[in-house]
Amino acid sequence: MLPFILYGSSGENFAAEADYIMSAFGLSGQPWDGTVRVPEHFRPAAPEETWPSDVSTDPVDRFMHSIGKSSVEILMARNGHRIGRVDAVFRPRYGDLPALLERLHASGSRATVFGGGTSVTGALIPGQRRFVIDTSNLRGISVSKGRCTVGAGMRGPEIEGALNRENWTLGHFPESFMHSTAGGWVSTKATGQESNQYGGIEDMVISATCVRSDGTVEGHEVPRESGPNGRWAQAIGSEGRFGVITTVTLRTHRLPRSRFYASRFFRSFEEGIGFLSSLDRFPTVARLSDTVETGISLAVAGDGALTSLARRYLRFRGLGDPSMLVVVNNEMPAKLPDGGVSLGALPARKWEEGRFQRPGLANRLWMSGVVPDTLETSADWDRLPGLYHGVREAFGNACSAEGIRGIIMAHVSHLYTSGACMYFTFLLQGPLGVGQLVGVRNSVVRAFLRHGGSLTHHHGIGRLLLPFAKHAFDHIERDGVVGW
Image (cartoon, rainbow, N blue to C red; front, side, top):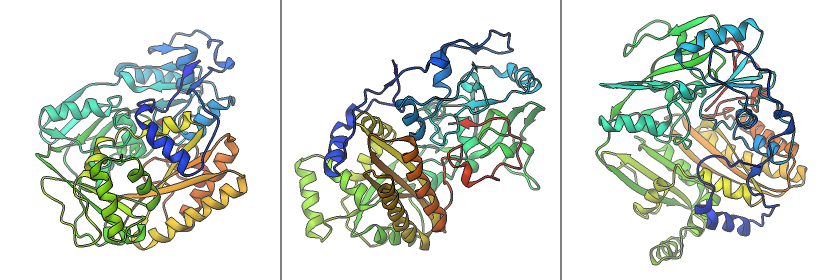
């Protein structure tokens, strides 16, 4: 049996939170030890061939490169569904790629590009692509004033650590920061938790180098130039279809000297959305949880004297079922207008302490028998409240239609002058079939589009959302699909 948790911790630190969720919302399921068996059809090794790259035909290696971290894929693995087989995993170095891609192209083969493997979009499902190009050997980093050039296989902590030693920061901190890669960030057009200050990855990319079956496309490393973007810019958000990103040059910023924390609590999620939309200047991080997500956070905060006092104070102020905003700002306190009830810095500090550990809660819920999932969208400020209620209604109707119990919660983050990202987390009671999960997911996505939201904000399209965006990649040659 093969350990198969999402990524990060196995979830021991989230036992209390998972137990509370299961109890408070009446969820139950068949416990799972978090392991899967490598399918039998992976065990026969692929025919031995000579390739211009390091290559692995190990069954476990091939299986782990045939599946991402979307709930659909994890449920398929848990339920023993047949999964498309990868025949070989290539780990090329820079000099290997041109010959490798030329060889694949000549044989009529295509390959999936694999970064950190944290994709939640189904992008790593092989389909007819029976080979994987793992970018882990595309490494190296050089740092100069205001920029860095990194190998596509470099992961978040490696990049940020090298920059911090020179007093720089990239400012890109997705929840998958500990495991995702620079190439994956660019190919999925990712956004980090501090995007209010630093922007999305598209705001950081100066240039990129991509290797394709028809040659290498290199960027021009200048701060900015007028006229059409270089051809390399098609790699941003292409999800690997433009080619294999090998190196990326990124804009950097001076490391902040200090960080400041604040919180506000509101009577409703809608009141909090109105507060955020009124801000003249956005903090580095501003994350507003709906009442469900806030309730879980408060319930598992512990029973210490300070926590009990905070709960009593909120009730005294008439906030029995509040919506919580946590704020983090670099260099100076955030300039927030009057509104809501402040509980000081502690809620924001607690959020920051665990911001890269949240996948551990998903691991714990999976092992408790619950199926967790997430979908995100963005919309204009005036549409966000209606979108929120529309998604909740669609989710409830879908659960009823599928005959399953579930709960859904949301938070708003990644703020823009015109609107914001709304990120939904939902939990479904097991045992559950893959078709039931897909049915609920598709109902949520249709509600996004019906209420003026985007198909996705920062996760990418992959395979799971491709039916909703059939023409999204028509202008790009399909060389592969990448996960991050």
